Every structure is written in C-alpha cells, then in structure tokens.
Image (cartoon, rainbow, N blue to C red; front, top):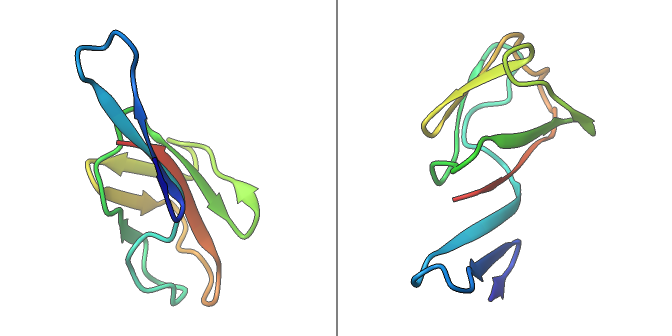
Length: 88
C-alpha cells in the first residue's frame, strides 16, 4: 500500500513478512550551519540513501548512522535541503 511517500511491501512466501519504503523523509534536527545530528522517524533495515541539496552523500565519508541518528561529518549549511530514502 502507498500512503504519501511510504509504501508497504508484502514479501510473497515470506511468512507474513513485510517492510515499508520511505522516500523523501526530512530528518529531524536544526539545519542551522552548526548542527551535525539529525533523527529519522524509523530505524532503517539496510542503511539509507542520504541526499543533501541534490547530491547523494557517502556513508562513512560524509555521515554515519546509528539506529535513528544520522551524524554529518560537516554540518549542513543553514537553509540546506536534506532528504532520506530507506526501508524499515
């Protein structure tokens, strides 16, 4: 099913397993030029695709993620657009 930018996928033969795809989530946190820590709404299953002002960032090089928490190596500039895609 699709609701907004999320879709729940039922896995055939998966014993009732399913996951939800999140597209275009804006992580929580102040985008003020000094904050490096942002929070997701859900814990990703397999990592994330993180996009800053249209550029896809590299995990380990540009940011780290632990659970719900994304930590940028360099704080995003004030007014930047951060979006994230992932499955949970």
